[in-house]
Length: 254
Length: 224
Ligand SMILES: Nc1ncnc2c1ncn2[C@@H]1O[C@H](COP(=O)(O)OP(=O)(O)O)[C@@H](O)[C@H]1O
Ligand SMILES: [Mg+2]
Image (cartoon, rainbow over all chains, first blue to last red; front, top):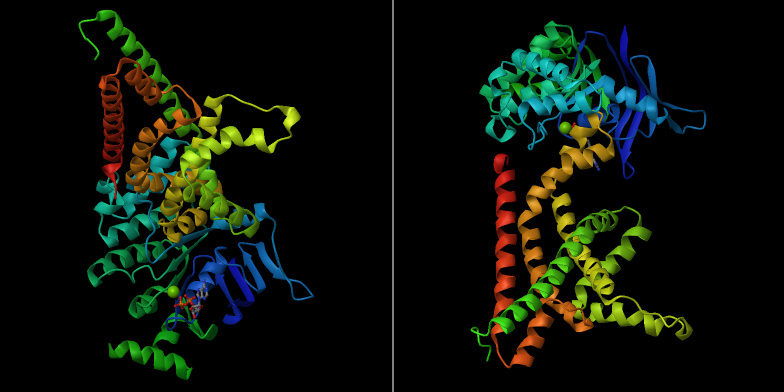
């Protein structure tokens, strides 16, 4: 089943093109890795999908619901507000910088959206949150505040917070780029766990080994374009495009 | 000199001063009651992306912060009489004028404090809330404002301490608050004691204000 369909997406900032004719699909239970040099538009792509940015043109469909399409005159048309709201709830997002709410405890960071947005009763929300924390290996931190946690713990709480809204697709924007290697491992372990449970995910990452092992498919972005797309192992070990090869070579040299 | 053994005149003096203090407290609390929420609205308008909202509010803040409060007080109380058609013979309660002038003035100062606080919250906080499905209003009141309040407490405390002392200004339009009463009593009795007692009152009031803010800061100390 198709969870995400993106066709001919264009996006520019102040006339400067940042996404050029981006098209791809994501099926249910699939993990898609997005790789590419800095500035190639990976974050912008995620931000267009979860409505933090508006596209200039193109069609986006999320779990069968049309988010936006381009009409004959080339004008992009977004779905009405309530459809966009329901689409937004189908997408979870994990940021590079965690963005936990510092004034809420770990537990409340996770329960706030289920209670205020999904109107879930407190007990149910807290029970679900504790289960998620258990899965993240963080049951003992429910009452801690974000400032008391390591970066890796913060990111795991952020993942739990996103999962608490039961999204159909989880988007990750370089979830481990702010972490040192030890903490990176903790977070990647959790993402592997989700992959094993067939959570549909789109992960922007510079962890090439992780992408190769965990992702089903991979996209290589360069200058706002998808230059290469395919089986993750294939793209990451045996790329066809010169730019992909150069990019991966740069990684292996480090 | 006041003779403190003269029981009758002492109690009378204290009663006058107490009445003045009540007026002072009224000016203080009513100003806070109106200017704190108004300041938030002004701050939001000041940060609007619509120039027709933002620019007039910038001008308002400029005037409120750029001219003496004393002048604003006099202008707001006497101004309408001169500006409005004479046959209206407009006049209004001096106390109302005092609250109006103070609220408008302090709202401008609070607005700039709020703005500083709001602008210090990272965009990541808003985006994290939006992608979780919070509305803009929920995001502001549940995620942003609580963090803003913690950050602006010290600056707000300063402003409130200034307000305690500024209340004395309303005597210029004839409101019988503490300072005016003390000055009159000092002149009448040829003694400095009333002024001294009034000074003590302002000091105690500011001690209380300082304590209240210290407690609030401590209460919000559970996170960073
Ligand atoms: N809000 C913005 N305004 C202007 N330019 C932007 C903005 N966000 C991103 N860009 C530009 O778009 C390009 C792609 O950025 P980004 O999507 O962050 O790339 P990546 O995540 O692959 O590093 C960069 O050139 C960046 O400078
Ligand atoms: Mg990026």
